[in-house]
Amino acid sequence: MTASSTVALPPDFPAEVLRPDDAAYDDARSVFNAMINRRPLVIVRCRSIEDVVRGVLLAREHDLVLSVRGGGHNVAGNAVCDGGVMLDLSPMRAVRVDPAARTAVAGPGALLGDLDRATQAYGLATPLGVMSGTGIAGLTLGGGLGWLGGRFGLACDNLVAAEVVTAGGDVRTVDAEGYPDLLWGLRGGGGNFGIVTAFTYALHAVGPVLAGGLVHPWSAAADVLRFHDEFVATAPDELATAVSLFRDPDAGPLISVGLCWSGDPADGERVLAPLRAFGAPLADRVTTLPYVDWQSAPDASYPRGRQHFWKSGYLRSLPDAAIDVLLDAVPDMPSTASGIGLQGMRGAASRVPVDATAFPHRTPQYDFLILGQWEDPADSERNIAWARRSFTAITPHLADAVYVNNLGAEGPDRVRAAYGANHDRLVALKAAYDPDNVLRLNQNIKPRA
Ligand SMILES: Cc1cc2nc3c(=O)[nH]c(=O)nc-3n(C[C@H](O)[C@H](O)[C@H](O)COP(=O)(O)OP(=O)(O)OC[C@H]3O[C@@H](n4cnc5c(N)ncnc54)[C@H](O)[C@@H]3O)c2cc1C
Image (cartoon, rainbow, N blue to C red):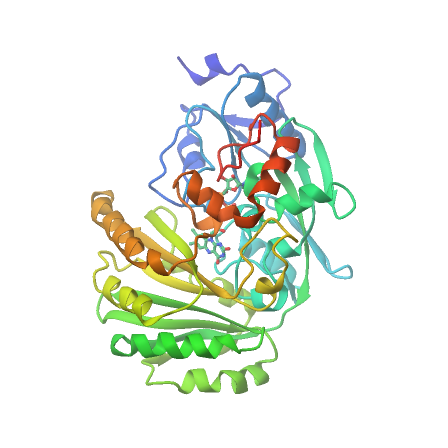
């Protein structure tokens, strides 16, 4: 049975549609994580709101599962479905900046680099993530933690309006005045409440940043973790840091403190001096550079098409026993492309009231991530086993909470931990906007019904 015989398209169907025997099908169904190998019945290449509306109605009419692809970066791979309708929003990549209003409107297929380049042309930016290839859509709907979080909050905190196609195929203009409940849910509730076809962000003045990495020898790892932890506890909001522990193919295990000072670089030189003077770094790569350059600095380390398996949680303190777990885990890491990350969530991002947006994890902490990454599918078993083992060891030190955008297919308890204190309110919102759970291929909030 072919796809065309199971999904009959009306003659006036507006969008380009790919089926399994089309040349572009395999490329369109592949996402960042090469472990994801799903085969939609049809892929609707959306270029307009009408394409999205008709795609939703197509899935509903044929009672098919629906998946939504933004940037295709999420490691859980929910952007692609098996045997259903995949809405591919990647052609909708345009960004429009209004420098006077300090807002930007971005299409749902835009990548971080698209938005950063467009806004930086005016010396402006909105907080996003830390590499240029991630999609703005999934990142923003799940939260969006990056180098500007301490000053301006998360990406979702800066989402001021959205254009949404509901699960019923209706179009809604969402902002603080119109559908404020939906705006609340889009700010951290993931893709549960509708398909966003345009994201409007608040922008801020962001000049060149003082940023880079301090690489320390493994023998200093415990001291670096402790010093860094004390240092960031009282650092100004302009500073964001992310500690990485990894195994270099030549040098063996290393620790690096990545940092970004987004205020006046002269102030940054002064504030950062003690951190840069600590210990005996093997390299100090901190320098003043354009924000867009820093935003694409890690891109080469995370190319599309590798195998990924992630385990994550929030680390609210760093006791010696937790440091011991990290010191044990890294030398044991099977792949030198993997890493353990402690991305700081502090300042403005941690001061937003828990109930102000759907994103609930508002306390100073580390977004802790065991990032398993390797090339050869034959190595999957031992890489996954390492990530699981390391996660089991660190679990006693983690809060019962996880960033929704780091989750794999980990079951309902972990999904609940991702939405935390806002879960029940999100369930009520889901019942109002998607009672049939049409949008279920995500970290799913089930409607009460
Ligand atoms: C290498 C790498 C680095 C990362 N760095 C960061 C970081 O610094 N900070 C951070 O916060 N996160 C980071 N992430 C996580 C990232 O936020 C998530 O993977 C995010 O989901 C990516 O969004 P996407 O649009 O590319 O994903 P997709 O896989 O396209 O989408 C993910 C899900 O979002 C939903 N969705 C997508 N588009 C829409 C839409 N228009 N309307 C409704 N629902 C939609 C769907 O449910 C979809 O399954 C990183 C991920 C990777 C792989």
